[in-house]
Image (tube, rainbow, N blue to C red; front, side, top):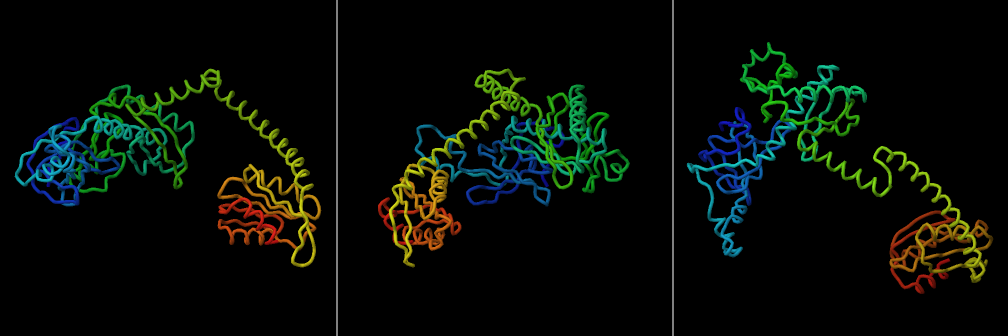
Length: 421
C-alpha cells in the first residue's frame, strides 16, 4: 500500500520516499515507494510525470493491491551525465545505475502539467454541477485529454442550455469559492448530497466546491475555484443519445484564445476585412468562387469541343476483328483524368469513333471511349487488355472506361491501343 501524498496536498511538487520494490519492464523499470506525490492514471485524469531519483518518470500506474508503480526510463538519466563523456560511456553508466529496495529517493513532479490537470479536473466538477443544478442533466463520463477535455451528458441539450451552464460555471469560478478535501465513511456519504453516487466502498475522498458541488473523487484539484481561471465550452456533438462536449480551462483556454486571435488577425489581413465582417466576406468569396468555377467549366467544355473537332479530324481508320471499321483517335496529352474524360466524351459524341487518350506523365492515366453506334468495341474490355499488358488498374462501362498506373512508353501504349480493339 502506497501513501498518497497528493490526496491531502495536491500542490506538493517534491518529496522523499523509500523504495519498496523494483521490477524490470523491458527497457524501463517499475518502482514502488512507501509514499508518493505522483498521481496515477485514474478517473479520467492522466498520470503525472517528472523525475524519481534522477530518472524520468514516464508513467504512473495504480495497482489493484493499493500500491502505485512509477515506470522510469533508465536511459533518461544519461542526459544528466557530464558533457565530455561519450554516448557509449553514458549508456553504460546509466545501465549500471538503478534503484534498489530500501533506497531513499527524491521525487520531483512536473508541476506545470499537474496544475493544468488540476484546473481542468476542477473545472469539470464545476461545469458538471452547473448542468445538474440548472437542468438536472447528469454527467455520464469525463476524460482529460492533452489539448481538450470532454464531458458526456446523459441527454441532448440546447444551445441556450449550454450557454447558461457555461455562464453559471464561470460565476462560481469568479466568486473564488474554496475547494475542500474531506473524507467520509460509506454510511456517512450515503447521507450527503453527492452529485453522483460513488461505486466505491470504504472511506471516500470527497471534493467540496463550497455550496455548489460535492463529489467523491481521487483526482487533484485547485484549492479555490478562482485558480481555474475560466471555463470555456469549445465544441459539442450528439453522442450515444446524449451530448459530448469539449471544454478548456485556465491556461488551455488562454492558449485557445491566442490561437483564435492570431488566426482571426491573419484572416482579417488577408481578406482586408474586420473580424466582425469575416463571415460575410467569406460567404461572398465562396459565391464568387462558385461563379468562377461554373465559368471555367463552361470554357473547358467549349475548349474540349474545339479540341475534339481537331482530334476527330485526325482519326485513323482501323479494321476490327469482325470485319467492320472505325476511326481511332489515339493521343497522348498534357491533361488530368477529368480533362481526358471530357475530351473522350466529346470526341465520341460523333459517329464511328473510338478514343484512347493517355497522359504524357508516367505511370500513365488512360481513358477509352466509343461512339454509341460502334457496337463492336467494348471500352472496358479494351482498357482491361491495356492493363494486362502495361499494368495498373481501372474499370468502367462498354461506352467509357478509365484507369491508371500503366507503365510503358507513350508510343508503346498508343500502338498497343490499335491492336487490342
